[in-house]
Amino acid sequence: MVKKIRASVPAKVILFGEHFVVYGKSALASAINKRLTVDVSSREKRGYHIKIENIPTFGLEMNLLGEEERALPYKDYGAATKAIAYVKESIRYLEEEYEIGGGAEGVEIEIKSEIPLSAGLGSSAATCVATVAALKEYFGISGDLEEIREDAHSIELAVQGAASPLDTAISTYGGYVLVEKGEVKRLRLAELNLIIGTIGSIPLSMGMDTKKASEMSLKTKKIVADVKTRKETFTSIFDAIFAASDEITAQAIRAMKDRDFVKLGELMNINHGLLDAIGVVPRRLSELVKMSQESGALGAKVTGAGGLDEMGAVGSVLVLPGESVDRIKAAMEVAGALVMDVNAGGEELKIEVGSD
Image 1 (cartoon, helix red, strand yellow):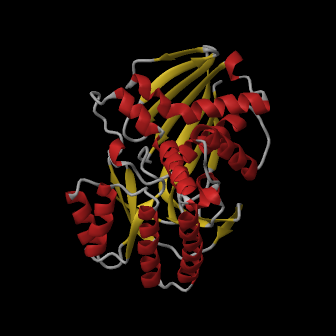
Image 2: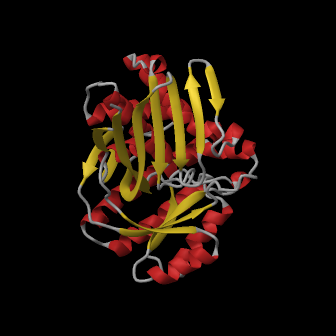
């Protein structure tokens, strides 16, 4: 009998406070109805076999066995194996912290996702949370949701160098989450129908440069590091910008409670300006925001890490459309964006136990 565990988690959008939350400021995020699934099962050969079927823009398959690492001919981008850095770190972390025995037996890990990679929608956090949850359940490690979130956050931090608890909180708990002074709080807020426009996610083309694919897979780490460098150079200016972000998040929560969506949209526009000021808004994402605003959106902003022009401006824009849904979507599609209708407040981590 083959034991099978499935862990499924939601994607996320940061409504307010991305980047600033890394430095202790408040941020508000929501789960959305796009999900990532990790299946863990036993296999005959010892070691870990990892298969990424889609994320959703490429696939990759490889073996991990002690110090031996070998890519298998699925859709192998060679150096792009760094795209599974979060899976590998999850395994290393769990083996060290909980002494799981995957190296001594056979473990199959299969990942399927509706979340575009490197698009600012929480693919790394989702991978960490789902992998940790599935492996802990598979190896019989007891614990609650908060312990899963803490483990996943430690893994994301190890890979990226800096990471807020926001993304892993959303992947774990779903709904709306506020991070304030380092504390994770769940909120009940008004439902939102949103549009996401994603630019430049890693393409299916097998001819893509593998070095660039590798760099893009960990772009968040570079963007976070660049912001840190600018903050250290312009400390007093950045302190004022960060304080403004804190106030914007607080006012946005009040607007959502009052169902004042016009004010909420205006606050999104202001938040976008702050993100531009700290250097995380590349030209193509900036154009998507302006295009959405000019097409009648109540508000629009970059969501998540943002992007870098030298990495193809990979990233996403979040739009509160108001009555202009079709016009905004058409404009985004003409601009070459992948456009998704999403609902805020998606479901939390789900774990299923089964067997063949």
